[in-house]
Length: 349
Image 1: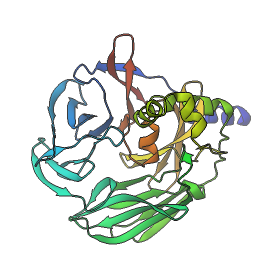
Image 2: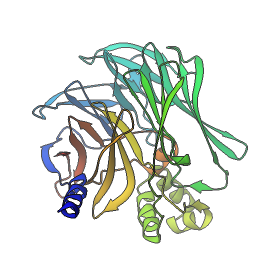
Image 3: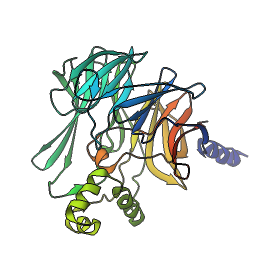
Image 4: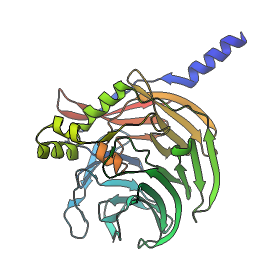
């Protein structure tokens, strides 16, 4: 009986789950990311943000303008604009600036960036951003704590990795961070399945570490990655310039990893840490759920969602095609037959 209970417990802990269609996003033609906040689902497309109700999935409105003037965002196909919630509304991030919106989607103010920064998020009256630099043969990624005008207060975290200008590292282990209750959670998967916790001043408070084995990068993974590469705007343009895709492959020094990074992505929703890995089962991928103290709450296999372009990932930009709210997993799915984008959802339980 004891053995049977152990098997049953393991089955309940790691459970494949299927999704269902909730609505067709008829206003959206080429989504570049999504966000869930304040009972709304926001879909990013270029410099426009489409808003849907989380309760009945009805279309509400859209906001955002294209341009270089006040309240406008430029468009960069390999560095999509993003949006995330703030305490009083939303923060839209473009290549050169941040625009702060109220909860009713009115422009409050904007701030121009002083250098190349991405994945910015408010922390009280300050801003946290990610900066990537190339120093000799090292790629250095930093998480910076800055004031409201992008003056650096403190470097919270640094990640160093080998880098060569004549190589193309297709699956770099880009660091992810999340902010919750004025604390900064930073995953450090180059050193293991590890998460650091910092307070609002950038002082480290704790580190969580789990024992998960790295997943080998197989020949079949390489084939799938190369197919994904063919959909990338940058590599499409480069192959045309070179004359053919074959010429691009022959002249590019693609570097493939021996193992996948231990952590693919990390978000925090409803005071739970959701970490996706590269572990797959059929057409599902693994999510490990932790509480804010690092205790494991469960492991689930959820539908594989659309990924950002390879170049976008290499640059470190986080444009997710999924979101989580109250144990519901929402994700975008393209219906190629109908040429429509759909919002699907599942209950995580």
